[in-house]
Amino acid sequence: MNLIFKKQLPRRTFLRGMGTVMALPLLDAMVPAFVKAAGAAPTRLAILYFPNGVQMDTWAIKSDAQIAALPEALPRTLAPLTKYRNDITVLNGLTVDGGRAHGDGPGDHGRAGASYLTGAHPKKTFGKDLQAGVSMDQYAASVIGSQTRFASLELGCEEGIQGGNCDNGYSCAYSNSISWRTPSTPNPPEIRPRAVFERLFGAGEIERDPVKRARKEKYQKSVLDSVLQDAKRLENAVSVSDRRKLDEYLYAVRDIETRIQKTESESALDPEMDRPSPSVPENYNEHTRIMFDLMATAFQTDSTRIITFLMAIEQSNRAYREIGIADSHHGLTHHGGDKEKIEKCILINQYQIEQFAYFIDKLKATPDGDGTLFDHIMVNYGSGLSKDHDHDDLPTVITGKGNGLFNLGRHVTYATETPLANLHVAMMNKMGIPAETFADSTGKLGYLSDL
Image (cartoon, rainbow, N blue to C red):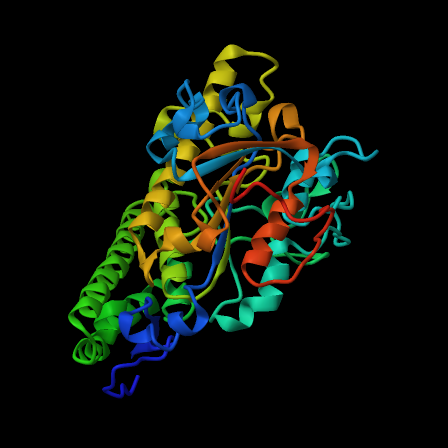
């Protein structure tokens, strides 16, 4: 790092060690050059997607009002957000028309994933001739991505294949990605915590050979061990307040690393177990939370300002044994009115909301400039399907204050057929991207900051 002992540090100050480059959170010593000059911490964007739709009668709020003033409790599926009722806004009436059949017949899951951020109606094919559209995250990344180490990150919690017929003639690539770099190039999500960790901290690709990996780990020890000397030099150059921020940050990184190592150690106990990678936690709760912690770290260090995250892929057959459900999620959604299957669908949606609540808590607890990440981020939690595999009135929750874009704690109903892309335009504009329209939008979504 070659620190110069002076009062001001550049925003892109890194700790360096053996094969490691560790970005830093925003410190007070960086504020004069960065925050005051820009007026505020940068605005970040996270899109969290859950698959297979939702039981809308357990999601929908009946009246437009301040959520805290509602006479009734939050609907059952949203109940885990009760603690955060003043930190969320629930939107109803938003539509992705590109997800509809338009003469192509069955295939709602493939269309839902491919159209959610592109607004496009995907070409029905399971060959190489994929065709959807550029997704809003990638459009934004093409404009502001050069300002950070990574233009964007595409993450998830379930691995899918990118070829073959997954949904009535639609390629698996449509179901497994919501981020599209070009109309024919999806960005498959990374689901391995270790791979994300090593990408963020510059330790290189994960070593597949167990003997070489053991030798490398013994040599390098931990990421923090390798940058410790540089960290000590930085502590001597900053204020007491910044030392505390640095200590808290390093502790958080160490905690993530330790949890990943624990997962890898447990995986090694059963080499016959079929799993995508030795560093993918078997437990969904632990997997999502490690990934959310990594996302918060990526935002806190300004390594990226744009992340998409798949809670699971469309048409997911995951079984949620953590809550006692051994059935395939996708299979349960084709319940035919079976009350037992409907109940299991509700429990799965509620369980995913619990993980979302954890992310809100993490954002509110993570320092960032003159506030927290929660103050400076826009988060869209939603799905490309609503009830009965419909593509209108999509379940949508927004959180984070977005540097003033969102006035939270409300429920807002929009006119029927209002494009979801209108929300995307509003978000991109807040990030400094001068887009008047995007995909099938009709303008910028209103009523986000006031009624």
